[in-house]
Amino acid sequence: MTGPFVAACVDCEERREATDPNEIVRFYRRHQSVTGHDVAWEQTPSLGVASDDVPEVVSSLVTDPEEGVPLGELSAAMSELGWTVGETLDAVYDHRMRGALWEPQDDYVSAV
Amino acid sequence: MTRWTNSADETQAVSPDITDETNALPADCFTDPDVWELEKETIFANYWLYAGHENCIPEAGDYFTRTIGDRQVIVARDQEGEVRVFYNVCAHRGSKMVEDTPMTDPGNMGRIQCPYHLWTYDLDGSLRSTPKSFEEASLNPDLDDEEVSGLDPDENGLLEVQTDNIGPLIFLNFDDDPSLSLDEQAGKMKTRLESLPLEEYEHARRYVSEVECNWKTFAGNYSECDHCQANHQDWIKGIQLNESELEVNDYHWVLHYTHEEDIEDELRIHDEHEAQFHYFWPNFTVNMYGTADGYGTYIIDPIDEERFQLIADYYFADPDLSDAEEEFVRTSRQLQEEDFELVERQYDGLRSGALAQAQLGPNEHTLHRFHRLVQEAYET
Image 1 (spheres, rainbow over the protein chains, first blue to last red):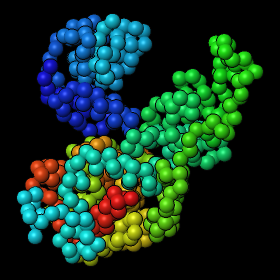
Image 2 (image 1 turned 30 degrees about the horizontal axis):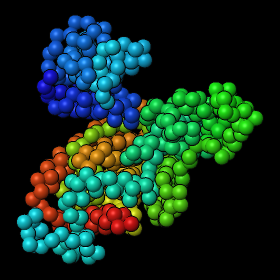
Image 3 (image 1 turned 180 degrees about the horizontal axis):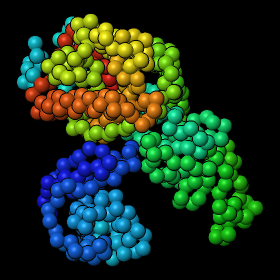
């Protein structure tokens, strides 16, 4: 999946453009830490996501389960359903804690 | 002579005399990732740093978190009304305890509890309770319960960080035994700010911007106004730059921008007919405006050697801003955006590696003081 990836705060005007989708996730964490604000995607490559079942979407995106899908790529995909970065990360956390997703490397996930 | 990278003249330490040509930091101090690692210990662990504003945590148990470099602290008001700062690290096995909580959306807690093994602390940092599994040895066949000594609450509390205040502004120092007190570091800035009713103003707006340059690049831009005539044409309307003054003190400097005479006295906090922009080493500013009954602060927080977050907070008597105050904030934001363009452009040039050491002009004496402080910190 190639960028550019563009996202912006839903409450203020701060925007971020990146070639690495996980940089948008890091931006969200930094921004949320000092403002409490969420971040929404403005520009992503279209992935044709039609499901709000996060593990199912992860399975459709993953090419190597041992490597996983970057959280930023997953979040960009879920944005086609209107999800923010924060909403995707919250859902990922819930699915990890229920055993439906695992993290083969930092900020990459695969379906169990 | 300019010290280009291919010059025969090598870079030198920042000269004490601003008229020398080596009066600025070498360019690699802005671009080298190792220098940022050095700064975490030599600058951001040894001096008084801004933690936040007391008015945002008025009640016992109110708290927020603040991250500086690799360290994160909890800033909390205890049951006696005192603001205390603790590392956000459990005394048991070092887990991070509370989630990131911004000053502008503070939390409230009766006690501080680590979610890992439920060690629980009072708001003064002392250990309040541990689960029963820490008081008996039921899973350990080699140990009797009687052999388990209890945990002394005072000896197993949270690691507290030194704090002090200037009015409602909370500062912290990660050094257990700071070489300077806050009074010594702030000098007459403390007296000046404490003569003003800063505590009567409420937090009204926060804007956080990520900027693609080294934090010192922005700090330098804030500290001089030789660039204002050419680059802040809206802002300098009504300011008499020729009558303005840049005042340098040991660890802070003040940019006094004289306003034209027709500004009403009600439109500023201080008496002087000017805007006063205070830069407090290493990365904090207090912006006393000449045309608004309010004040602002900037935190210039490094992310790494090539990015920083500018955390801009605005304080007014009423957080519901009037149209005029909204317009003032908008103009201030425009000024920031103009400066971001300038510092990112400068950083693009520095990153190219062409320039080995910049040179400062005679009216960049505030910036010269800043560069000298950076160098002194590196040398310690």
